[in-house]
Image (cartoon, rainbow, N blue to C red; front, side):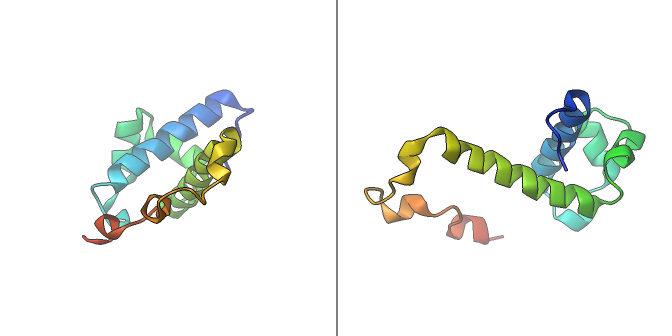
Length: 101
């Protein structure tokens, strides 16, 4: 789990999560390698294994990072809570564009 209070450890984990998410935009999960993530994040392979046992651990932490980041936006802006005036199409997080390979 990402811990903001251990800043160097946290910053490294965030770099790996962001690198993973960037690669995930262009490649399927099963084809992403630890080496690719480490190269993109600028860390050693041993650093990856200091943080994660498996790629699935990184995937889980990435999902948590996305959720935490997204919920942070809602906490900061109370106007988001009033969705009644918004266009229904603006409320979708996933649309057909995201579902077509």
